[in-house]
Image (tube, rainbow, N blue to C red; front, top):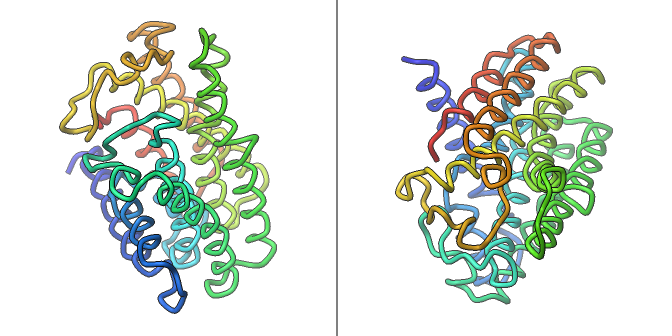
Length: 304
């Protein structure tokens, strides 16, 4: 089996594990309006690469050198998927990107209406913090570690993080965006949640402060590379594999890396960022770094 096939198989296994946990992540005893729960799980169960939760599992394993930390990682892995899913539900709304399809399915507001989609996103966001608390309460993470994870999540998913990146993206659409502004958008809209994922996994695995800094470098770089690759795929990708229309950025007059620096230079940036990310992992001296390295390569070579 090739390295590419092996990491794809590993990510599929992680995705299956996460999806089995997501099914039971909302307590059955809670009295939740049926349509709200349906809306939440419609988007939670829409598939996708489950990259962010996989990175939590992988980073914890990289530091500790075994899968023993998987059980402790799973609630936090579900939490980041809740956050990511809420951001997609809100991002697809008419007031934002106004998308009709996500991962080949009708977007949440097209099925449940705009008001329920907004509320569903709100519920997904807030439930993420409940899940982190459960990791400390029932899964062996120390209260101090959970507190650090909650603090990181609130920052990296909030105003100085993902939401700030989304706001900058929206504001950037109103005028010409510079390369510095575009980097800010990508670093916060995409990279910050990936930074959260690898550092949360690192914390669960018992990483040192220096190792956490290097994981942050890794996450920031692969997050930026991931988003530039998305910009590239929007121009040259296969709609069937992507599960959404290509050239949507062009149609919406969005400024992208290929628009500002060209397709070839964008590809070169992805390669440079990937190599810097891998160098950070190697410097960290992890017990089991191989999968973090393979994931970095996979993101460069993916076609969807």
